[in-house]
Image (cartoon, rainbow, N blue to C red; front, top):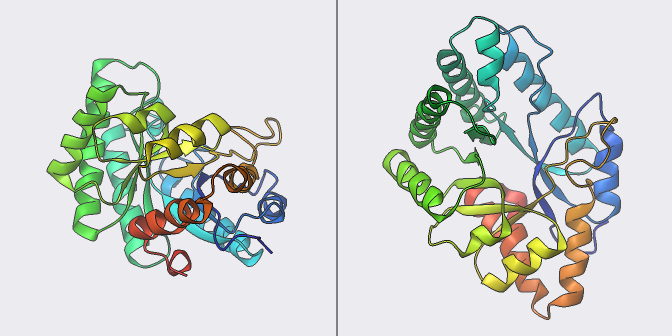
Length: 276
């Protein structure tokens, strides 16, 4: 049992062909209680069945993780690099990824998943058409999330303050920032003059920077559950380990825990287990 009421990893992948349930048990052993499970961009499936099978697999794995004792948020949706997968298969990437967005929205509104993501732009330089098309896909996702009141997780390149303000303006045109998260943000991004909620890799330095800002934030591992790359991006137990660090460093750790593990996640995901 966790020594803390709630310890939430905002972004992780658990995979049937990875450490799977053992990874969930490791998370629990170190004091984790809840996790946002995001579909992993595997390309095992045919283009025609890709999203249907990927989403179903993510939901099935999440049920197993939940049965192991971890409260789960489930996030499904097109990944920016799906663009190249569909392009290489001779498909129209924009239309295929829009179809994936519509399918995800249907599953979420039926109560079988919780959030849309990770949607946005590739994290490396791409040509102008790919970047423009990625913006079109993001705008479509924002419109769909607006229509169905669905949380959205952003995947982008590293951005300076101008980039955040541009994305924030786009979000406000199509949805609103209250239920949008920038995944894998850099800790120094928290000092920018925008209002997008940022989720940081749970490293010691990131946490110190984020806590000192006094602003809302979330913690994540972006754990990929790959046996050939164990611990990538950081180990599955990292958020509960950093919770221990926060308790040792900050007298107001209870207040910090409540904000980053309960208050902010509940505002975005509206899952009852955050509202204890």
